[in-house]
Length: 298
Image (tube, rainbow, N blue to C red; front, side, top):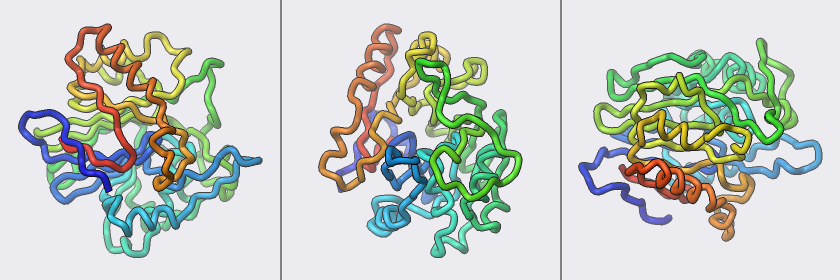
């Protein structure tokens, strides 16, 4: 496993961030572990019919090898699509974690989808139903999570894959189209007074919902944003020029973590677009290019 990458030269915040591919993150600090959009199976969604086939063996290998920390005490879901939450039921159902309390945050739809995918009822009792605007404290003040109403990416046709909501658990999902968006949330995690991390799962945002936020680190989704007005310029300006920005959701989503060509699946133009926006706005923001599963130390 590659050595961690240290970000910045100032006082260490003692926070590790590990990119899980797509939009996913593992955040670790002070013996605590949090997950955001942990999609790990990376199955081939292009197969005819788009079968929903998460692979428990992939998850087990990552955890058993130590390449992924756990159990998490919190899982944050940005939206309901397969590449953001297909593996969450498996993670919540791990028998070795049965004695650990794990909270999950998402919308009403996300809860119903988790139930339909067989998430244990005991885990759903610790589900936090959010709509955006919640400001939550965990670990007796060890960290704070602000849930932010957000938007899904919009393609050139001004739409997006599998829209919709669920007001009750549907039939067991069999196709990726069965996992509907169900509302999109962003999250800002504040670790004591040491670091603020803002994470997006969709390539879009609601400007007024971000007003006043001044994160240190922002994970910016970089799928197609050609239909959005000045996406990067508006986002970086609204957030006041964060110290660090990290492109995410710019890999192919299907190449396995151990495949020799994994690094080549990352779209390097995403980081370049961010650098150009930083230069255009004359910000002092540093663009960090993440590597799959390689920790970033802040």
